Image (cartoon, rainbow, N blue to C red; front, side):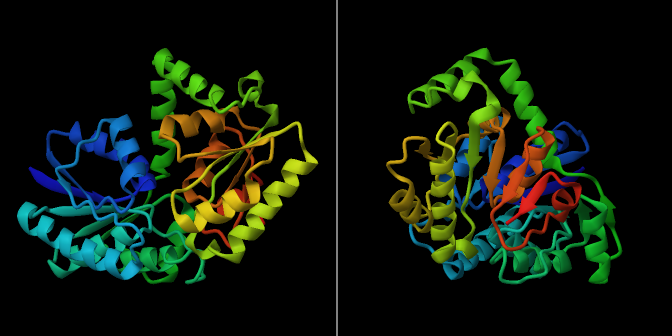
Amino acid sequence: MKKILFVFGTRPEAIKFAPLIKACQAEPGFDTRIAVTAQHRQMLDQVLNFFGIAPHHDLDLMRPGQDLFSLTSGALTGIKGVLEREKPDLVFVQGDTTTVFAAALAAFYLQIPVAHLEAGLRSFDMRSPFPEEANRVLAGHLSTWHFAPTDKAAENLAAENIKKNVFVVGNTVIDALHLALSRLEHNPGLKKTIIERFDNLSIRRLYSGPDRLVLITGHRRESFGQGFMSICRAIRALAEEFPDCNFVYPVHLNPNVQKPVHEILTGMPNIFLDQPLDYPYLVTLMQRSCLVLTDSGGIQEEAPSLGKPVVVMRDVTERTEGVTAGTAILT
């Protein structure tokens, strides 16, 4: 029996790992173990609860105001201890977070093979997204197995002379999305709770139809400061130009996001600022929307699969396939 250790720390990682974890847990030849760094505590726990995933190790690293130095060093040391106790045959990481880089480096130091899910994404700009572009490049060169979502991602790896053990497998975020939709379809009580939740926000037209709902998400570190102020001013201008549209923005908990969002957007009658939403709530909003404004990587993939066009609020994107296909516009 082979022992596989999944290491992750954020909500997007948990969403994209959920289908794979479930598949591995159902495979009798695998001893599936789970370690979380919880670099995003509350938002991670939402997904773990929804998909019924129970970690065997929880480093609980999230601290108010932590910087990349403390997060990286804490993750590296904490994961070292988990690896020494578990002695896995393989470490699985996903994406481009600080947890991914720290876990790949720790496994490399202990000479444990690393498998990288969502390998090969590149913006070709080390400062955008920051520090994610560096994280995924470094993790890619530390990994033994590379599971790329698209042919383009595999080509990016080949350009860096990573040509061995590269597999194009599609994107597990779509599997997770359909799993969530199925759970919502078979849980009318949850659907009712979600509707009541948004009714309490006074979004009266939310369930009258999807033609007048715009969903917004934004949290990228490289946009902190002037970037977020520009994004918020643009959203305010849109809300003024289209008063018959509802603009719903679940605001990330980071103070660098909260401050400009509330300063610029509070008080607009058709802008609804909310707390970060549980995954099924966010999926429901995507289903009901006519347009998504985002800087999120996962939502760039999820929204088009629901038939929703995306405006990507970034200077560059590593998910160029959506732009090429016309499902996304980069602005």
